[in-house]
Length: 97
Image 1 (tube, rainbow, N blue to C red):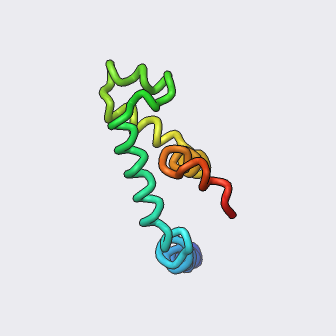
Image 2: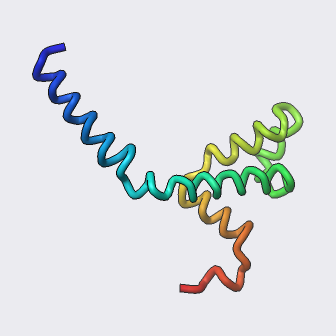
Image 3: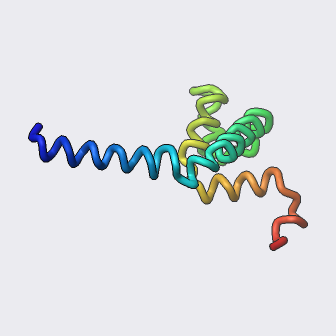
């Protein structure tokens, strides 16, 4: 690796650690996201009938934990928040601003 390339990659690495991996807003909120995912996971383990049919059908061949993990892993951030909201937030509170 050339010295110029090495110096540029080190500069990029330092920037990423300071601004993305450690100091970002997303990193600060990481605990909330983790809690949300854990809650979704537990609720779906307890109530597998809430899984969409294509994931519910995976329970028999792959097991409940794999089916729930695959469902959650395929969620976008926005869909995970919507699903969490629908599962845990009373309907009458959802439209409060």
